[in-house]
Amino acid sequence: MLTADLLRARRRGDEVRPLWVDAQSPTEQARAQALVTLFAAHVGRTRGALDDAIADFVGEDTDYLLHRGLAKLLFDRSEFETQAALDPIELRRRVFERARAHHPVAQHAGDPLHPTTRAQVLADVAAELKLNAEDVERALYADLDREQVLQELEPIDATALLQRYNVSLAQAMLLRASSVTITIAPGDPKRYRQLFRFIKFYGLIHTAKGDRRHGYEVTLDGPMSLFQLTSKYGVKLAEFLPALLLCEGWTLKARVLYGKDRRQTNFALTPEAGLRSHYPDRGVYVTEEERGLVKRFEALESPWVIERRPELVDLDGQGVLVPDLVFKNRDDGREALLELVGFWRKGYLASRLELFRAHGPKNLVLAVSKKLAGSREKLGELPGEVVLFSDVIRAKQVLDAVERVATKR
Image (tube, rainbow, N blue to C red; front, top):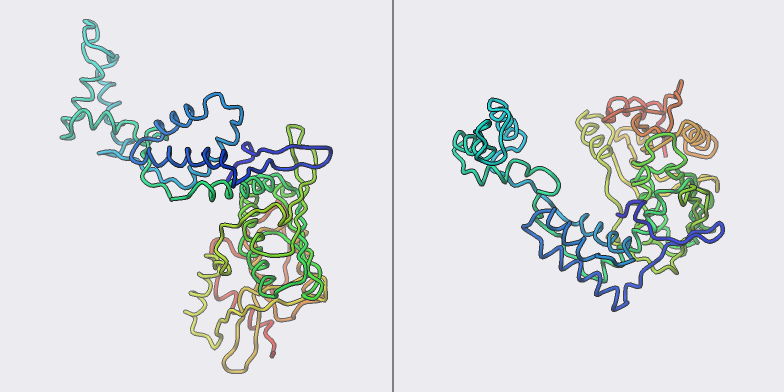
C-alpha cells in the first residue's frame, strides 16, 4: 500500500483527483516490468544494493513519485532476512567490549601509540567464536535495513502491478479522509452481506440507512475524525477499499485533508475509474477475536450452540445489522445475536445502542474492545447487553449476557 507521501494527485478548486496510470500503456508496462525485473535480479542480495539500483534506475526522471510508488508496492511483496553466523547484537557487544580493553583502537596498522587495530579486534573475536574474520565482518551489522538480504519476491506481472498501483492511489487518499459516504444501488443481497461483513471485519465506525429494495447509504468515519488510533484506523479503512471494488452500482465520496495546508477537499470514486480489486471474491475472513471466542465458548459445554448465518437485518431503514454470531439454546430454542464492535467513539457507541433499542432485535449482545477506542472519553455505565474486553472476549461474560437477552425466534 502507498503511504500518503507517495500520493500523486491534482487539486482543482475543492476537488482532488488521483493521477491514475494507464495499465495498458506500453510505456507504463515497460516501466513497471523494468522494476519487477530489477527486484527479481536482487533476490539473494542486500537491501542496500537494491536501494542503490533503484536510485540509479530512477535517476533524474521527473516522475519520481511514480517510480517510488511502484517500488513501494514491490517492497511490500518482498521478504528480507538477516543473514549472520551469530546474532549481530551479541556480536557487537563482544566486539565493543574487546575494543574497549584496547581503547583507542586504530583503523590501520602502523600507529606506534595505538598498536591494536580494528582488524585485530575482529580477528580476536572471530578466533574466540571459532569463526573466520570475514564472517564476523559480515555479521557485525547484518541486522541493519541496508544489510538485510532479499530472500523472496512474491511474483506479479507489469499489468497487475500497475492495476495495484491505481488502487493504492485511492487507498492513500483515504488515509487523509475525515468522512466517507458510500452509496450502494439495489442489487444482489449476497453482495450487501459481503460488503457489510467486510466493514465489520475491518472494524470501521459506520452508520447505514436504506433497505434491500432501495439500496443503502453507508457513512464511514475517516481516520482524521478520530482523536487517537488515526494511523491504525486509516490502514483498516484503506484495506477495506478493494472489498468495495467487488460490488456493483456503488459510488464513494470522501472529505479529505489534502495538501500542505490540509484543506478540506472532496474526493469521489466510481466504478468508471476502472479500479480492479485484488481480493478473492469469496466472502471475508473471521477475525482472531471471533475465532477465539468460539473456541472458548464451546469449551464451556453449555446448552448453547454457535451458528453463523448470512442474514442481514434491516433496522426500519435507519441502519443495518449483520450479526457475527448466533447463539441457539438446544433445550428451549431461545436465540441471541452477537455483534463485534470494531473501532468506536463514545458518541458512535451510544447512537448504535440507541438505534438497536429503537429498531433492532431485543436479543442482541455487543462485544466492545477497549483497545479500539477512537477517543479518550470515559464510557460510564453500560447496559448489561454490552460486554467489554481488552485482549480476549471472555466466554463466560458472553454466556451470561446471552442468557439475559435471549428470546424465542
